[in-house]
Length: 476
Image (cartoon, rainbow, N blue to C red; front, top):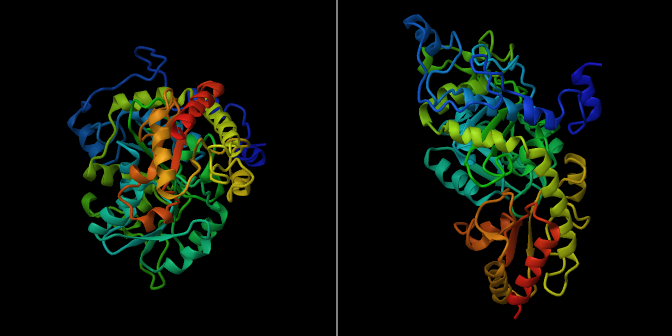
């Protein structure tokens, strides 16, 4: 039985000899430095790389030969991160080979941040006059980027209730170029029905793009296994895991046919499949190595050599190295985060003295609307480690208690990040989603009195004790 057949039989979270998640996190993507034999990936903290000759430089710029030119586009340290993330997310990686940067390019692209990853992904396939359909329950920064910044450059975002997939059908027209969802909506915990939405995307001839930040780099969820074509994510969170370095990732599953046409026979994705004006009219979609009929890595190639080249949101080699270090412990941390989150959600849901009954929004709870979808699409027992709950009270009283609780925690940290090794708390309505109107906040699942917690992997009893003393102060 081949590795692909075994993987299919085992499911996206099953074990394939030599390709286990932990083994991949530790070993994939790094070829041993033959000159110095460094076991850890070296940090190539260099802006640029010297050419062997004038001919060599010309070949590199013409993409007739591969290899690093300038760190904005390619860097050996960053490539290790990209190779690892593509494999961990379950991408097909048809051109990875032996991860030799002189003959292949990763099926992933590392960027300066998650926001940068979203922007570079969408700008690779769309231009002014196009639109895309996105879930209304999004991280606040994602919503404002899509609703306002993209609008300013002529790209329209249309929003639908991700819990009702059929709603997006009515929003799709001939100018629609993608459907965009998040693995777990922040902060409501809503999980999309990937297969149902993927069927709609396939019918509309558009890629399904998923922000898998809350999927912990593929550890808790692998949307590519359920019909998604492209992953974007913030590597700042669980991938790095320690709140030290910002980064973003795009992963291409090489599953979408970029040469699809409109009813009149014109290319639906001329930005990808058409002639590339900045490369003398070359049609990369027909390239013998990267083209659709070959490895179908034309999208991720153009995201690198066109969009990143021009927009410049590159990651630094040092940050890439820090994120690689985080990946090596991701499987251990992912399991610990998930176990603590499940326990904390269960404990809070029964703590009616302080916590509003029914307000704990974590997919591990059978009462959560997405519980069955979580069991279908996520690694067993691992349903993410971010959720919202509300303190008892009504209106302004509940909001004030929530703020008092946040101010009273001692071990837990009050900050805007998620996915840190430590437990973090925040009041979303007045911070991360502050720019949204009350109506937009409601559509995004943000409760006026909701406290968002990103559960770390401290000893559970210590998290519990910190919450208990903060509750008492909030209700004093």
